[in-house]
Image (cartoon, rainbow, N blue to C red; front, side, top):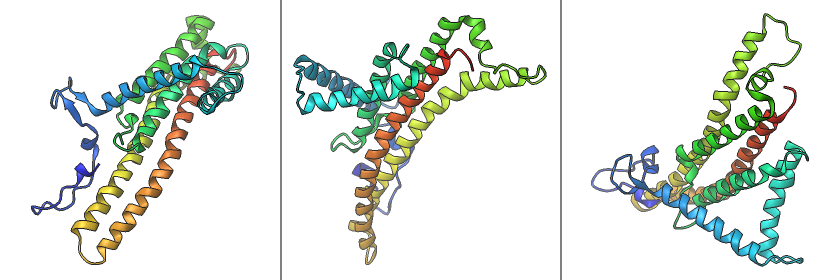
Length: 263
């Protein structure tokens, strides 16, 4: 994080910006570069897989702390999201998808406040967009499988509408189902992670600059900036959990909408 500080040589303070989230590790400034968020994403998959295999290998009737915490997360997704939203008839087959989405987003988000890593993968738009495309394919797929292609498009329009307004409503629903939902699903997660992390970086590097390079009372402002960074870190941890929950919740709602018999 402190690599963003550009002091001395008359350069002054340079505020963090979008380019600071690129961070290629190999391959230079090309589309084939190996970037830091790519490595962090792979690390999250390895960590989640290792944890789940470790916990489920030694399941007991009276759970230990690791099993208790894991079952708590699984139970929240299974019962609080999948079952309550999708219903008891259809929810089980979607639990693995929703649990994977939640844990993957949560771990990658929390990496933003983990020392030495300190990078939320979802602050790079490609990652939330990829997850949104998966959800997009699933809810359209199950809807078409359940109702047929013609029936799926027909169910987008509420019954009983006057004939003159039906084409307009159908067009609006078409935009909602095929454009608005996946775009907003990805942008909501990306925007929160990007904004939260850039605020944290600004507090840290701004406080460092004021504390070590500014004069007089501005050094006190540097201390205040560091204190603000600590508060923001706590708040960001809450937001990171909340965004993982909201993304999973909306995914379940979209799938439930595709499975509904009526609009």
